[in-house]
Image (tube, rainbow, N blue to C red; front, side):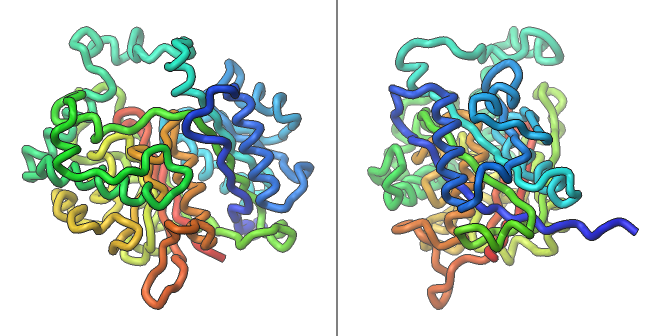
Length: 389
């Protein structure tokens, strides 16, 4: 008979320097975040036998492992856009549970803002020169226009308004105002969102994520390591992954994201429901992403996301705090932001979020959180359910 699967906990999390970082390389941010996460865990680096990293180097995570001085026996370089880190967390948890690894480090770093400022060309963002997307590229589909098209479809089909989409940005900024590490903290209004310069109809500038530098790291470990750690463990209860499309012509319904699949799987495996969740960290490169992901995860019915996000529901003191650090719309967005969702969820569950700490009725700390990342233009999704130990 097979041995029982080991439980898996997040035992360490950390950010590198974030926001405006002009004097560091992406590798340096990887190393800084990794050192801080290990220090946060209280474990020695010798226990780390797994590494997951993407977005840097030709042989990621081999180059990152070498830079960090690690020789892992389990690696993952899955690259599916912003949901990469939730997908990697799922892979790592499965490997640890099965005994294929003991402690896996997820690590990321990017100088996207500094590179743009210095006019350094580090990546080709002209997706689709070859492969299926070549048939859409001549028509001018940019990444943001794909999201804008989807948002317009939701507005047409369900009556979602520009004001409701703007509420997502306003409430993200309200959360960021309580986060000293957020890049933008000055409160904004719905009118300010609506009156900004149009980037891709219906999105104005404040409907879109910011561009920052930064990195982060998350350390997952088997249950037998938990007694030696320095912090309250945060257990991974369940996870789910899903992919949808690359070509927009292959997306069956612009109002349904792959989170509808990854979320259902994650909740089923965790044995909890959306009604049990105390807070949600959701990928928000654009306001529409937050709204439709809330629907697809089951926090409200399809088409009701617009009404759901009104009246401050997503703020730290709201009914369902969402993106409590300010999200990609206000806090930080150096590229593949999914790792930051896990870090913020863990800090909230451990009660270490300072002025932005979520408190439920009676002042209790949150017990359950969901982190759900989206990659590409709703091409992929990873959802992870977390529980405070």
